[in-house]
Image 1 (tube, rainbow over the protein chains, first blue to last red):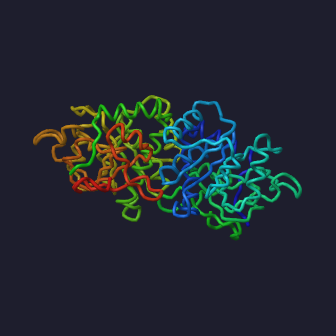
Image 2: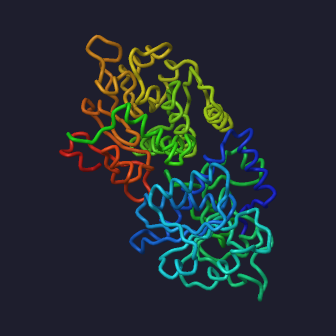
Image 3: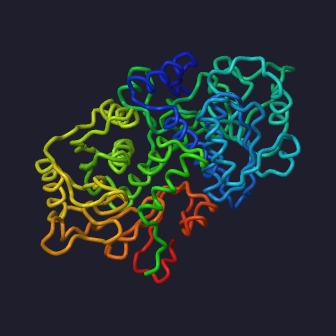
Length: 240
Length: 240
């Protein structure tokens, strides 16, 4: 298993560089990241398998990716429901919520009830900048994600995992959390070495120069796809 | 032929509404519009038919869509060249140019020389807000587009066409311009009734409510596609 990974501090540097000398706005990067999340959901759980998708969004950019994904999922024919208990204040996030409301998408305050009736779950709670512990109101949500038998797609890192160190230890919150699906944005994070499941990479905006600078590989995307499957157990991670 | 069309003044209102009560930023709308242009190019002219794409960008938002499309085309495996003689000053446009330069994409000042060696051309010069006459330095470019036998994809409206009235009259500049491919953004413009060629609709962000309000139909996009082919001669335009 030798996928090239991007440590959290480097991921932050890369984002910063994309948004300064790279010329990107956060709006653009989040749009493409969220679109890739929605494409991954479609790949593993097309609407024919059940249209109800619960999107759990955290307070940071990972949550924003979830909001964008939810909009695309609506247009792809799903019925998303959003759990977004700690809404972010910047204009971009206010706008993303407005977009969803103008599509008559439901916001729920009760993750647990909504989970019972959903077909698929997107975990966009914490991303590469997460550091334990999990703060309120998310501990019971993480616990529910760890226990559920419903399919979960985690965005960038399974929420509650230490992005470098991997899953929580036995007995700790979310110790059993191993979502069947994971999409890494730009590049896998170091904790990917503990992941067992179906893994995608998304965020089709990495230039060859930036990849080289950060010791990454530009994923081998096909056609107009915004995602590519990248098996975590492939020797050399050749699909990346 | 009864595709529901969107008159220029209504198109401006719709954009304005998307960016106020709709919660969108121009960055987001342009990202999705440009991505759909790139997907249309891929559909009709995949890289296997020739990777060299010349993207002619005008001074307004249509040109911005072209810049976004060029970035995606690079990631799709093409070698785009940009003709952007009147660069727009707002930060978004400066950023889009930076993104292209950081991908080492060539900007040309000589459209005509570049046209000789290209495989495919994207006409992102004028969009729905265009009013004749064609201003410098674009008249010779429009004339070249009208004369060339190379495949051209026009964005939203063939540049030099009156968006309501249709193509220029015989003897006028660009009178013969009938690009083989056209992608309408959000909805076809009234001049579509004069169009003969392969037509797509893109910009997968129109809500059912907005469509109803503007007397449009949400196009019947499939899967995760950002475009849909919408034959202009279909009775009732049923593919829309």
